[in-house]
Length: 511
Image 1 (cartoon, rainbow, N blue to C red):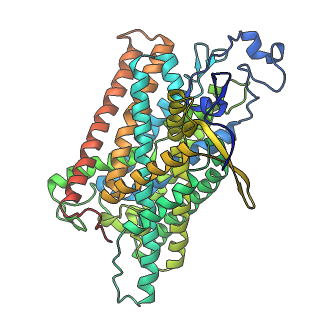
Image 2: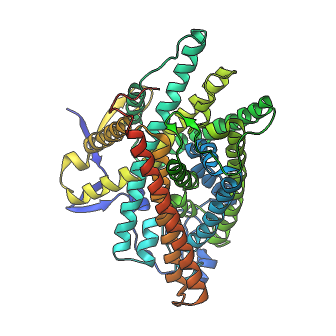
Image 3: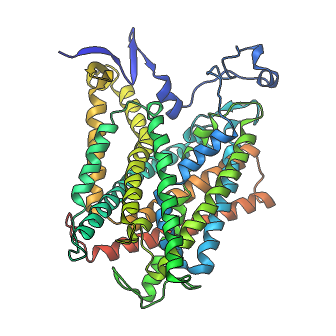
């Protein structure tokens, strides 16, 4: 019989449910003490040197830690599709759209940073998560809408990362197979086994109880992302030099170009250009975690001031890196730029360097999967604990001694639900193994509502900007323009899926 230790994610004392602090930190608006300006400036008047104005332990985040968090959140597998995106748009529109998305993200991120505190930006009550900020500034159905978009996006990211990891694992296997056979074996293989392998790994890592305990995995993932992005950039530069110049055209991929999906028609050219917008939007998606990052910053100075500086620095650095990776990738391959930059280098030497880069992608995606899914895990587990507070299956934990680790506290609901979640994402990935299409759809879904609409609406409500004033009109025009971009990106990505499905058989995709 397993020894029962305690209950989680709620503890039951005398019939009352006591919420876990770490889960509430991510998913629930807390009732905070009202803070006067003098207390905010001199917190020692009401709190010790160890606590902030909301009674929590002193935050220690700085400009540099905030900037590193943003860069880690932004630079991910999306960077690998930028060369393909620029190839669809060309040398004129490609870099221009990339810079435009950077400016929009910079502006709306600064608006969102002002919403960390409700009311006064120095003494107002803190909002610990994106949904907390929505509830405090907008309320009503928009909270539910935000939750649906946010968690659906997290679910989609899990699918996208599963597909991307399988592509990289196959690239390693095919590269070694090709060189071993001396180029005689085309080394075709199915992606299913690699997706299942990634799923098994994620089932194990998904048993890490909560977000606070995956920090080390996040650090490893960040190092890996810089490693493979740098390798991709270096190989792109090397290939441009080897080609004796830049490839590509001013207007992007030409009509009549033969690709693996067939000959590019005028209609396909339009769909691909729209899909490229979604791929670029996905590469910049980090608004989802901006409030959480800001909640780590110490004050004074006011958190929004530090966050704005960190945002400017991070987006400038990320955009420069994106331009280099995307442009050199396009310059290396021209119209035939691959959907995944590293796998597109195929069997070029040094193939061992490509193997290392693809290994770092897989390691990064293992960690990134957890970083994005832990808030979703916590949300479902918190809701279940509130719904069935007396169920041992949902709330009880049992001590499991593990050699060289110590005691692991097993929760049966966590074990079953997270395993089912990973199985579902793996199954959907096997059904729709289209990396670029999935990336485009995710970018489209998340860009307008999470990056533009909610930050603009919260800022208007918080600053009490009058209807039909010049500032109100300008913000609304920005929101509507970005909505049109999102619709175009979604349509293009869905069209891409439809085209891929014409030559696709379920569970029989091979490369």
